[in-house]
Length: 259
Image (cartoon, rainbow, N blue to C red; front, side):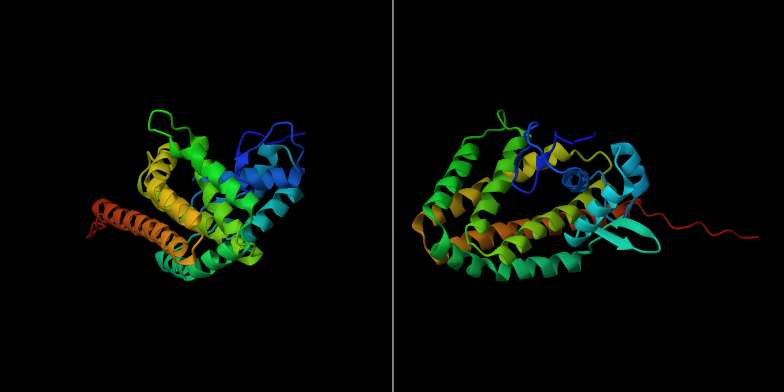
């Protein structure tokens, strides 16, 4: 029976252990999600359930269950007539999502100060220490996953399931939006180099958030989260503009045919 054991587990953001038993349905779900978030499937692209079922040597029902779950996360669209497609976000969708997440920084910070346990604080500190001394020479892609884990651990410690669900889904939707622009606009895009860039671009934001967490004050934590969100928004806007400029440069008018 097929099992995918070589992937980044984006539920708990830890490297999946080959010995850990998971359901086949969960495994297929994670496998497809990783391919989407790594830009293998880009926005608007059709996903053929029958092809995936054959490729993974599983039933089509198992793949269908996974695609339904991914639709619920905002990564796929399902049209009963046309089939399954990778969700295609436009920039207005993404701006609205950033606006929503920005508005929740104060709430996240306040709940974190009220509810984060000592175990949460120790776990967060452990994660930041694992990435604090990473250099361009020592960096590995697993460091990018640790950086994601740090950000998620902070939100999870606020102990609000709906808030965490929104954060967990929103960063994946932001990434899907950026992946579409980068892969459709720049064919030689390298996902590992992109992850590296994100890791180092976010280093100072993670450090500032960690300093704020040590103060255990709502204002500094909220401010640090707002700054990180603003930087992410600006990155999305930059990629969007670059894609538009690339499209303009590659556009050629259709020649007029005269008879």
